[in-house]
Structures are given as structure tokens and as C-alpha cells.
Length: 255
Image (cartoon, rainbow, N blue to C red; front, side):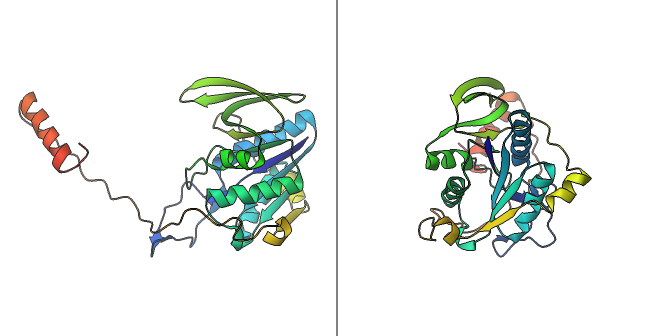
């Protein structure tokens, strides 16, 4: 079974976000595997252990993203692909186009990824990639079973469960609860240094910057305003309700 995992390197979730001149500063920042993608990596390794095959992890990003890929290799993935061509960096539209080209190049039976990236929270990666490849897609999986070419997925739907049955090839995005990602072992870390990691450019994938040009542009970025102290209303209930309505209308401007 050819198992492909699409993953992203993101800020450590404990990092403080600093914005300078409308851009997020990366000075001194620690980067990690996107937490939801860790579930996808773990599930891919479990599938390999159960059904055999090979796990390939793929990421788009600068050279520093190699660290995240090496971590996935240390966990048990077999090989990695890094698209570190800046002409192929962009929004979710760009990412889906590029990942689709990689998937066609390396081959796949199943594709796994996180249900969203914690830095953008867009949740568009999986559905867009599946659409590019013309395959089925099931999101927010908390349980995955494969029997031959048949696939059974339990997915989280706002606190409840929905069961979806489909067949390979398919793309699945992972939700918290799908598994418990393993820690890389020392032998795994040593082996990861020797596992293959290919770097691909636009020419390698037969793409041009015009082919994958982003559909959105970030005009500016800013931190949310600091929370102000709450206000306690006084008087009888009718007076409090009247004052609350006026505050919501004139100050908060939400009604």
C-alpha cells in the first residue's frame, strides 16, 4: 500500500506571535509538525504496520521544513519529499495544485493529512487536494479501518459520530482522537538521518508559477485588540436590560 501523508511545519503552539511591519516575525521561533498532521503520520505508520507498504511524507516550505520531515521519518515514515521552491509557495489553492502534482509523481493508494493547520485554521487543504485528484475525501476522522479496498471511517461531527464507507483511493483528514502519536525513538532518529529526502522544484513537477498563482493576497496582519475589563450593570432588571441593549447597539455595534 502506498501511503502518502501531506504535512506542514507550523509555529509551536506555545509560541507568542509577534507582528512586525504587517508580517509575523520568525526570529527565535520554534517550529513543529502541525499537531493535526501528527495524527496523520501516526495513522499512516499504523496502516503500514497492519497492511504493509510504504509511507511517504510530503511538505511544502523553506529548508527549515526538513526538520519536521525528519521527525516524521524518525517516527517511522519511509521517505520524504520537500517542495522548497519559493515560486510554488502560496495560498490553499496553490498548495493543493502543488501537492496534487507531487501525489501524481510519487503515487498513492491513500492520502492522509490533518483536518486543518493550526496557523491558518482554514481546513481547506484536504478537500482541495482531493478535488484536484478527483478522489473521495472524508474529513475529521477519529477511527479508520481498511479491508482490502474498502474503507470505513468514523468522523467527528460537532461532538457526535458519523460513519462513512468508501473505497481506495481516498483522502482522509485526521481529527484529535484518531490515535496517540508516538515519540521518535533514538534508533528511529538515527535511522531517519539515512532515509531518503527528495527536494522538488517547479521544473521537477512540471509546474510554473503562473499555473499555481495564489487566488488570495494578505494585505495586512495585526493582533486582535486587547480585551477590556468587563462591566457590571446595576439597577433593577428592566433598567439593566435597557442599558445592555444600548451598549450592544452603540458601543459593541453588534445589533
